[in-house]
Length: 204
Image (cartoon, rainbow, N blue to C red; front, side, top):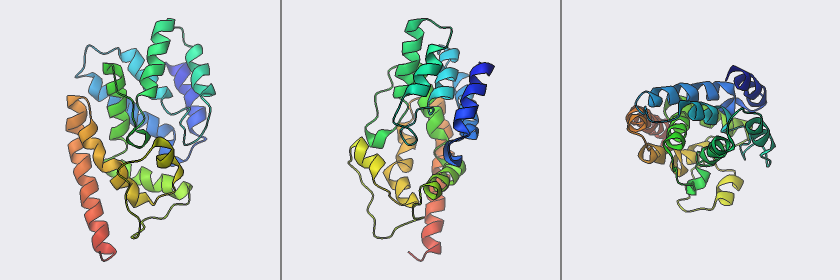
C-alpha cells in the first residue's frame, strides 16, 4: 500500500490544490472513519479505490492510462481488480449523472470523497479549483442548472458559488452510509452559513 501511495503522490502533486495529495489523505481518513462502522467491507479495496479514484479524473485528463496501469500492477486477482475499477467509476458525481454505487466498498469511497467536497474544506477546494480555472467567485446573473448532461456539467465555466447550488448542497442527502450521513450534517450546515454570510457581504 505504501508503494502505491508513493506512486499516486507523484500524480496528484501535478494537479491544483483542490485535487492534490492532501485531498487524497483527507479522503483516506474519512474512509477509515466510515470503515470502522462497516466491518463487512473489504478495507483493502476501499483504500485502493481512495488512492486511485482521481488519478484519471476527467477534469485533468481524457485518458484512463494512469488508472489502468496502476491497477494492472497490483498483486490481486482479476476479479478484485475489476471490482476496484467498478468502484472508481461509481465515485464521481458527473453532474448528477452518477452511476449507482452497487457495493459497500463503492459507497464508502464515494461518501469519503464527497465529505471532502463539503464543509470548510469543501469551500476552500471550490475556490481553489475555481481560481485554477479562472472562474468568477460569483455571478449574480447566473442560474444554477438542475438538469444537465455530464458534458454540460463539465464544459460550462460557471462561477464558484454556482457550483454550491449545482452540486455541493445536494451531497448531504446523497450520502449512502450511516456514518457518512452523520459526518455530512455539520459540514453541510457550515456551507449554508457561509453562503448566507456571503449574501450579506455582497448586499443581496
